[in-house]
Image (cartoon, rainbow, N blue to C red; front, side):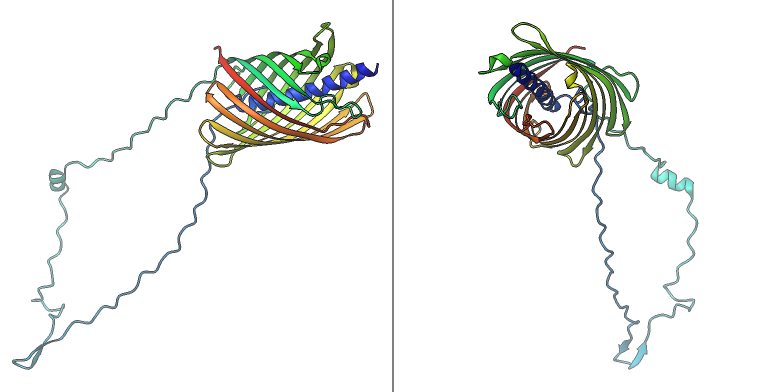
Length: 360
């Protein structure tokens, strides 16, 4: 009975870990997914306010009075002509009005030429249906999450996801996916399992750079050896996400996620609130670095248990091309649980590779 309980705790913990790993692996390439991410779109980068220079006063040059010219021969004084005299050569006749016809004959007809609009290159269309292939391996310092039975191991996860994101309107999308995968342990083969995941939801753009998504998620875990189902988890999920382009290379993604899970066994029924942020920096056009933080509060409704989890992570992603990427990650999960037998602390270091295959 104790071994079964430990196995269950381990698999539930690994399920949560796999979901976060898949999200982390997908976030670099996929903007519309089951993870709290935002649909890909072009953001207008606000220019920084430029301070205006203070007006510089021009120096005032003194105007000298009319010069008095001495005629040394006659010793008399000759002054400049009086402007009021009729014989003053400085008085010019009144200007005649311009003849518009003569001006047009000399200069030609003057017309306002509108500047030509610069055509922007067309943006690549995002396919409505894609096949996402993911493979990752990572080390885990605590695969069981059980205080008295801590185990470290290397984990291998391979999965394939069929993702459909057709537009329902100008600001609305349908997001549907089906995922199947295998999780294997290097030395703890008794923990090996297979998993299936289904997701369907509606994603609505709320404002520029902001979206909301309401959907349903089902997760299934099966024992590798006897094919028995270990877990069935149906969840209702609400996600609010936002993207802020802080500079040409720096972007901040943030989200809030509310998830109510109804599971078999019922001891896994829970309500989870998550708040997270991801700061991404484009080191080069193909190389990206990211810093993640996530706070998760889990309230288990059918047992006396409440978990508080913090997770920090660092990712480095290299995009070989627009559909193929290679990444590495390091993360640390820590927190507390009201159940004395649960130890959430876990350090993980891994690498992953992903391929997106556009179908249509």
